[in-house]
Amino acid sequence: MANLLRPATWGLFSWRGYCSRGTQGRLSAGFVEALKAIVGSPHVSTAAVVREQHGHDESMHMCQPPDAVVWPQNVEQVSQLAALCYGQGVPIIPFGTGSGLEGGVCAVQGGVCVNLIRMDRILELNPEDFSVVVEPGVTRKALNTHLRDCGLWFPVDPGADASLCGMAATGASGTNSVRYGTMRDNVLNLEVVLPGGRQLHTAGRGRRFWKSAAGYNLTGLFVGSEGTLGLITAATLRLHPVPEATVAATCAFPTVQAAVDSTVHILQAAVPVARIEFLDEVMMDACNRHSKLNCYVAPTLFLEFHGSEQALAEQVQRTEEVIRHNGGSHFSWAKEAEERSRLWAARHNAWYASLALRPGYKGYSTDVCVPISRLSEILVQTKEDLEAWRLTGSASLPRAPGAGRGGAGAAALSFGPPGTVVGHVGDGNFHCILLVDPEDPEELLRAQAFAEQLGRRALALHGTCTGEHGIGLGKRQLLLEEVGVVGMETMRQLKATLDPRGLMNPGKVL
Image (cartoon, rainbow, N blue to C red):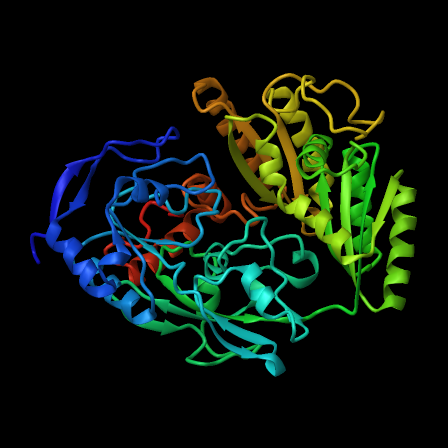
């Protein structure tokens, strides 16, 4: 099989220039037949439309598609695929649901996309130990549906119904992270197929302990590795008891500063809030129209509290006092499950609500995270930057019937393609979603410059250039600025040790 590859010239390039103009390997018929021998002919595709679907995620980063897509059904097939590809010098790109936002699945050097979504079994549930073992195709919603009758749930909830192992690969978080933590806090063990096909259990085969002082934290190494060190084929996850009672709320504020100050004061008052989300007035307007809400159009907090009935009453009272002290108004409490689900579905669909502001435009999303004490400073400055860079809402946008009469959102908004701000402010993390005309080079450059400036501002405030989206293609330079030369050298040494041929999801992170 020494001649399974023959060179071909690249044909597609990212608008941000991440696809180098080198050569990629077009897979020979013999190599494709070898893939089929491992997973079966129906589970291999070289069709252009299938390859194109697997060459991008939800981001603006559009790159060369892979040369082939394969769908393994078990870990043994993944090991054989890794051994075959690695032995022949073929890049390997893991793929889950494709819901990432930093170009993490782009095949910048061609190769084989390993779509793990058909490995979708829940392998082992241990209710007494609050743990579950899942294959990479299990999504967060599917897991929680499975857990419905056992009094447990998995709380990490990014906006998309992402695959759980994909969430581990990107170090995802979500609206519940302020109370329950991110994927880094809720992954107990990983089964990983290393480059070359060996299988690794990062905490030891079958182990599901909550704490350990045994050697290096290999599980932590692979959480957030973005497919650059191996393919995650199973994850042991920590589960949590379903709360006895739950109540959600929305409230509006006269300014961004007031909303963020309330967030900080609620946390300083030791209120064990489960969710505390910020939406600026442009995003609130978008969610009203897209999800048929009727919230006041102003800087808004969405909150949720978990606990006993007695504890909730105390939490709600203390929170209301803080919010009113900061000028909050238009309280709306949601106690029924259906009403809460509608509210949080709207929050989770904020990305699509933003896209609906400008049909035909593409979404460019970036995120940062800063210490909670600096959150107000960076959010206020970001809103000013959106105005200055002409990346905020338009006065021509129609309003939802009955939404936001008067108040901060009623005044004419600035010209330019809409930009929205939404975030998990309880842990200092927020997102900007910019709508960009992909045919307008000036808009593309403006969005790129804005994202880089925001990342550097977060670094200057002792934060990180990404709280949950990951590095992918778009933030490699910012990662260098964040961790420094020695940090990058250490990461490259780890990468070279585990992936000496540089074939695992090449071009990402480093």
